[in-house]
Image 1 (cartoon, rainbow, N blue to C red):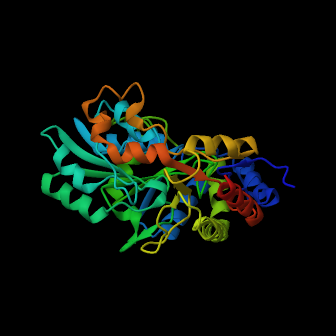
Image 2 (cartoon, rainbow, N blue to C red; image 1 turned 135 degrees about the vertical axis):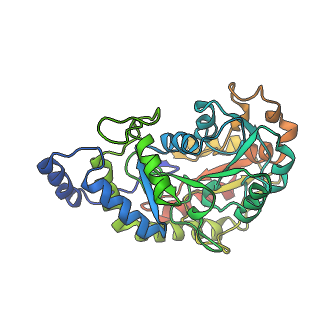
Image 3 (cartoon, rainbow, N blue to C red; image 1 turned 120 degrees about the vertical axis):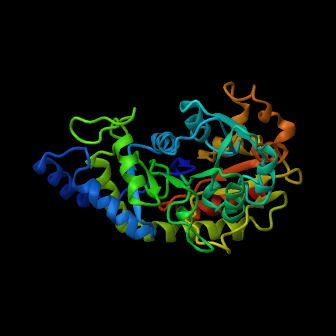
Length: 369
């Protein structure tokens, strides 16, 4: 009988003995931060793995979001989704920008391009979209709107490490894409993040902004922040990259096992699989509808009672938090699909070391309720 607590996600940690040589190199060269050798190596290897030209590493994804908006000089209003982690909208507030929420697509749970155009005002300067659960947004439709109205496009790609859409890496779309390397992500550096940059000039500006705005030893050109990734985190990232293919393959098998076991459970809806894109299987969300025997919250509580901890991800909507709910765009009438999704969603445990036997146990439990 299982005695281990099962969380919605757990970080994949390579063997400790393989990490020790990295630590020895850090100790011997005495470079701990400020773009050291491991930092530079990780940027290069990530570009090669992800198929992008330039990457700027950060201490976390939130600081990367804040800096991305600053680097593009975004002001006024930005159209975004209420169905995300709060860091998405918080990054706007940190820059003095007004979030404008629009509804999401019922199939993908990404921002609905058909809702964007009606929300554009003379104060709108950008669209901040999220590849929710790693499922690519409708990047072509969003770009067409942006081109028509001369708007910038920033993608919160925290869930989309290694994801390819119809034309290659999804990270190449928009003006900037932001990654998170938090411990819960498919690829992690304990804490970390990155901005995917379209050209070297943009990367240089972003590298300056994440280092207090320094453009040399005695020159400061902007009010930047301390967003640098340490050598310790970069070293872990280099080791993680060696195992990323294996980790994603294991996630895929777990995803397939869930779909096979839950396909016949009435009232449990699995989001569409990744038939049209290359997935990283970052999360496994299900929607609990009215045909299921109990509601989502009751199922959540019953799973926790047997030491299995899913997550209502994303609930509540960002637009329902105190700093946002006073906005006119936060009205639930404006966000009908997102409101419904937030009341139904439950992300089930998925991580490389999760045994298929535990997946079977979770599915059997859900089917018996």
